[in-house]
Length: 166
Image 1 (spheres, one colour):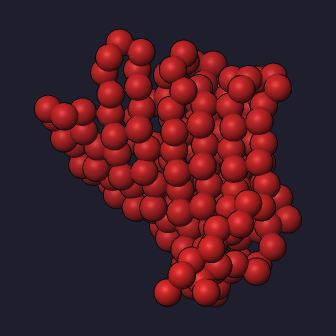
Image 2 (tube, one colour):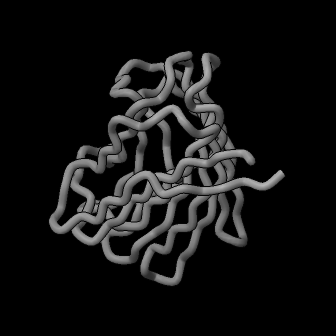
């Protein structure tokens, strides 16, 4: 079965900002993909919040490694989704992708994040995170931000894609 990606929106920061927000997301796709490339003002984790829900309705299971060490674990009852299991560099852009499945359906929402992080010293990490949002509401807005409240640096780009199954 063929799948089609359609760009819904792209934001490139001209100056530092606390978040990148996608609002009024149409319910016309089967799934969503968010791609974020950027750095933070202070090394911190990239987070995602759905429909402005700040309650502890999120959880995840993660696996990350650097080629010699691997770590796994889980977070329960947290207030957002981690987009990466490692903090972002302040100087070297990292890429995070988050696929959100059946985002307009009436079941709990699941996500799959894959990211690669370069710490500027030659140290590299990759990770995979499976996430759950315990809400049956259709996703109509997505906020990308730093878990520490730090700014996302100028030049960061986030793109939201809708995925249609053909």
